Image 1 (cartoon, rainbow, N blue to C red):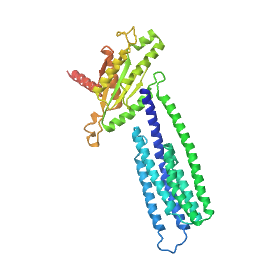
Image 2 (spheres, helix red, strand yellow; image 1 turned 180 degrees about the vertical axis):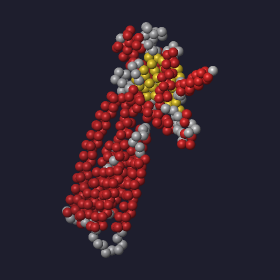
Image 3 (spheres, rainbow, N blue to C red; image 1 turned 90 degrees about the vertical axis):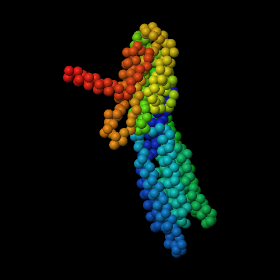
Image 4 (cartoon, helix red, strand yellow; image 1 turned 30 degrees about the horizontal axis):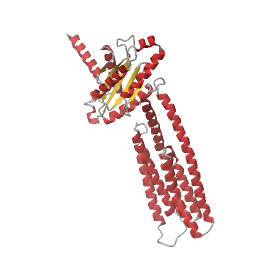
Length: 416
């Protein structure tokens, strides 16, 4: 369970990077679309022959097309500015953002594709111009390959299908071989683009798999095959921000193996390693949800992060873990319990999301990540002081309150 959690976390982290890259490249697409639209509109008006028929609506269609295209590009840029690459998001949110970007890009490219029917006329120069511009727009859509090869294929169809049908129909009407060269060129270039995009997509996926493997190794404890402290600290920061934003509780378990040094000295290093592996395997009883994370925090210490978990539920899970370890019945001759046991410290914080009006009045209620960690560590120390093989709890901030009361009592005592 914990190994799968690390794998899932690594994939989420990489997907976050992919979506962030996709949105960062939107600026290039924004300016590229506007520049290409300006170039094509100018040359469209310049190359279009004079038409005596006053009912011709080509310039009216051009203005409407430009308004729609520019509006869509501005809206996509507005959506892009709302995406914060530094904000941690869950997989469902990342998929939503990626689909939103792909949908807008597809609509923009469809508008470009419409130009291949509405804003084109029987002039070879115009045909080469529109085909060149459409392939340039397609090049601006290449970042979509970082998310989906299928989505890029949709862009190709949306851009090139209208102009291809127009040119083929025009060739049939004119009944000349000259115009056959242009639609054939479009088909060949489109096929080449799809083949190259498939190759690029495979390289990107291979790179993603390599990143996943390397990051998983960097985030996993080599002995126990659960998360290491580095990954735990990183996840802790992200989850703390999320709980602060949503105003939900976050709990932590700190687990220490009782008399482990004595066990290592009496049973040997290999037995100690096997003991650590066995206890790491027990962590699955408290990490049932995708957001729960168990990690090896130190030599014989483990930490369990439980987002959106109350103190009562965290204590219950701590007791379940303690019982699971004790039920392993790993012999420990030098322990007072004669088997390997653990002491569990439990703490819980509720991080209020204060608005500016309440910030001054409620500043003393603000919680910090270190307070949760310190409270869990104090609770674990209390469990050891009470005889080990037990679960103790301390609310987030209780230590600070106790220190204030002690200072106040000392101050009053000094006056008397």
